[in-house]
Length: 460
Image (tube, rainbow, N blue to C red; front, side, top):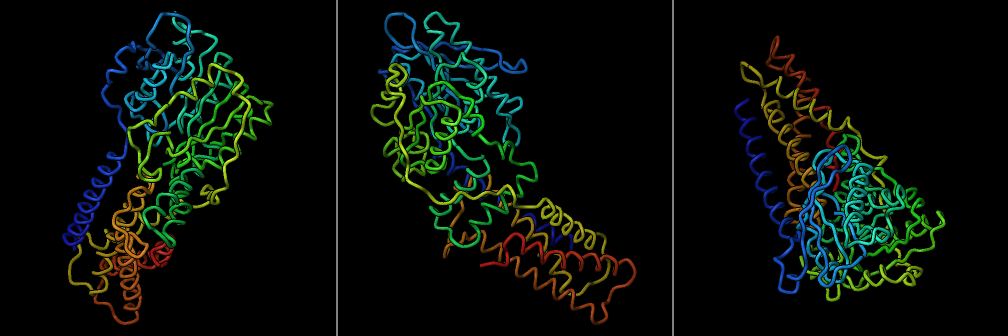
């Protein structure tokens, strides 16, 4: 029996590894990377720099200085979104601003204290301020005119830094989020699942139950960070930009919440700009905003530099049309659902360990199906989480094929569990320790029924 269970679980692991590799390949193909500098950028001066962030962490960056005669120019510190893709990810933007007369710093995000499962926006804000001070110390930068350009998650960080220091002269945000990261992520999942043709209960369950369980398990750092109180403390001029085809940042809701927070804080120097026909990071798109092409639209940076240089452009405002409701997963999910899955697998392993004699067929089926179903279900749901719902695999009649398989396994396991429970009504050919192990397996089967219902395996 152990050999059969091992073989089944190995097959599941191999299949999920292949599926994950396919998803990562697809995701990387959609991730922008900076291209080699063209002849139009050769006049830009680049300087490799290091500076010290919070806690003495050494950060590495590149300063891109504009061509032309030396003189005091505005400075701009670029803050990356979620993840740590390094300087190449924002190189195109940095070059665009440098060509337009802005001394620009782009740097690699810290790896100490920042990872997929660990982050601290306050810590990142201290690093960002260290970048501002680096530019202020340059002879070609006007120290009173240094600000931030912040993308997505970076727009959680920039307002914290700005509220702490008057050294920050202005903020430009791209795809800023006005709700909690948990709410934004849930809304984003819905966008991409709809794009994939996923309908039915899987989408809403991923947005609430699955994401809520991940939060309770500590897999989603800063999930309940509320940016609105921070924005109330920002008194510098703000240019908040969203792409017309932004599928990530809940743009309509976020724009209204951020404007309202700035107004409550007494800041009237804020502009909302909607850039037509571009995606979340203001790049061109051929897929309705669902792709990440490494191509900037024509004239990228012109409006932003005009805003930096001319204060008269700092008072207009735009209201975006309403969007679908934003789910809130923070009150959903339970860590006990994960613990129950582990307990079921342990009971099955105790049943199978050093078993002698032949047990009834229903017991053998349950011993194979229960761990296989649990591993497949949790691995696929985790796969959807880490890919943000952007890679689902083939979809059949509104449901991913991988999830249909999980549901079929779930139903088969429930049938086996019921058969095991009913078998105790007649004599079971087990004695001594064998009956104890069979009792544990029966308990695992009984526990599996609510576990399957919790994860939506029994819903269509």
